[in-house]
Image (cartoon, rainbow, N blue to C red; front, top):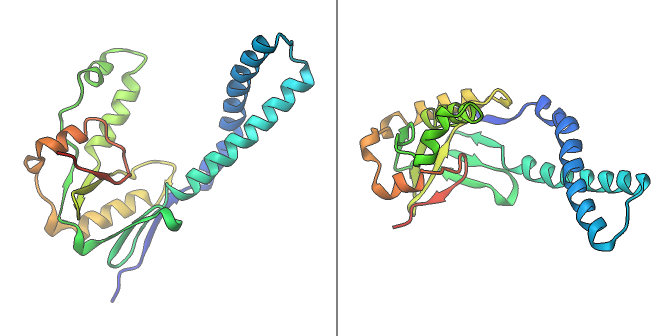
Length: 201
């Protein structure tokens, strides 16, 4: 009997965060652009011009972010495939083509990332990224491609469930951290989580 598909995607509250984040981002971008144009044109912006620029920039940023977010943070584990993304830009990985998988990324990281833990302003980011690295599933598949998959986010619906189900499906292909090659370690110094990459060298 085919296994039931598991779909991981952002929760509704994730989209509500746009109401707070996008107006703020629009204000910052509009202020930078408006300030630059005001200086170049030697023209002091009026209040209506400022509000109009803020509204236009916020709308454009929101539409662009929604277009990206609607496609990328979407994952589906079916009976025989793992789909990353949606639409024509999605990557479909047949489970039988997965060569091996490792739970946890290499411990080696760039020096500047290691010292982040000692700075109060960046220690939180260091801890968060370290947790992502420790809980990622590194998947190797055809043509030297790979994906460091991590869906353990509070805003990701069914993210943890999909990860656990995928680990169970790949239990016969799980290998240890000693299987990492030098090229893979280098590629994972700055991993693009949940994005397909190609090992170079």
